[in-house]
Length: 124
Ligand SMILES: [Zn+2]
Image (cartoon, rainbow, N blue to C red; front, side, top):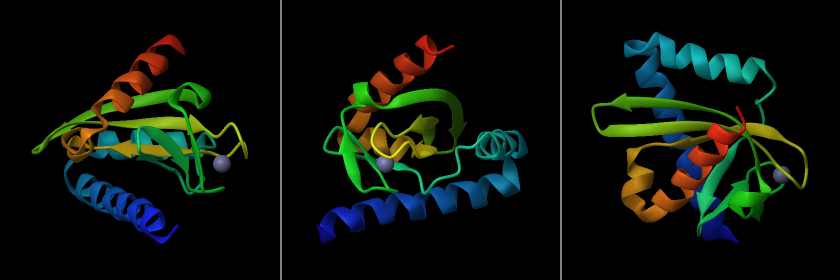
């Protein structure tokens, strides 16, 4: 249980760094994130874990196909391409954001990001 929580907390920290650095350099990205939060995607958020989506509100992992994808922001920064997904948990109905930066692709979760991106396109 504890290593998994640590993993989630690490991505929360990544999210804070991302938002902080973007506040300085990319207002449009930050505004897009704030708009999603205004639209109700304001839970603790989600992280990717073992090719599944972990809801930080109820601490439950879900298959990518079970999570509702409400939208997607694509961005690029100095380290590469990243995505922010607006997701809804099928278990507790929490709506929140998943930050998938370039380091997540490098960490081997590229298949999950690809699956989420294609589901986000279908949702439009
Ligand atoms: Zn949940």
